[in-house]
Image: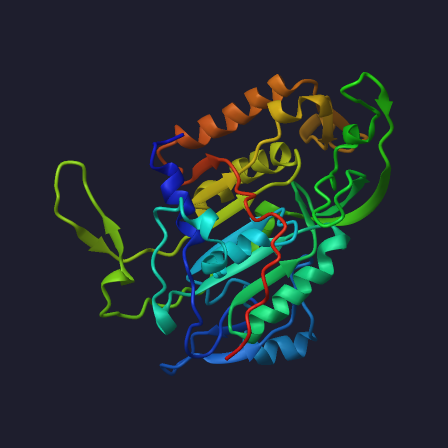
Length: 367
């Protein structure tokens, strides 16, 4: 870790948000700067997983005048919920008053500021078809009150394409935490009494997006609205130094924060985010869970070995992490390369908050 304050910094993402004024931007209802002082809103329907506009080329050209925008255009701050399950982390950001226990420990969150809250956009990546209807319901409920939640029905990987996921029967139909690419979870298990328990395991092929390419295409270089001036005290982030009791304030700059919980695939996706340059360039913080020692029984695990150079054109193989210790070494290498690099702004924080994993809270209602 870079410092003990990394957790506080990363958890700023779960700060309150309220309904903003004016035309909605990003996550579907987008704007681009025009020659006038007021942006012109244009409704643009997008398939987030495929990155394409759901309109003709002529309609697209007319909408933007020259070229299509990005899904994150108009978003001052972006939260990427990668492996969102049923979307509770997005809800903790947008409706913190419903989750007081989780937010009690988030010292960096700011108070609700009323109608002029900075603009946030949340993108939830979830491949499990069992959760798709809930995410679409959530997307509609938030859109109705002016909040920007965009569901990307896809898994994430280091290439665009398809992957085989496995529904591992674990007696939990609400969360279905066993939805994974790791076929090792399908093998028989030993019970505490020493008996062998077979695991119900069905496979399903789902769409996967290369996360580094998606961020580069839809977030990097986005149109960021200017922060409106506020008279209230809490419109700025408070900064204290250890050597002074003086409190200074500075505007909170645009940020991109990612929560990642993708069932072992973090060991495939993070190296690609790092080597592509996207992680250090675009992502301010990653709050993530690494599936290592606590999942020792699931090893060995294998990943596609696509290779390059002399391997190009050859049949794709696999590379394997045989033990959780090997996975921990890879994890430490990734974190070390990020945190030792003075040119990398990214903070990586290991951890997750599943206090309200099953949610159960009502959707917001437009007033």
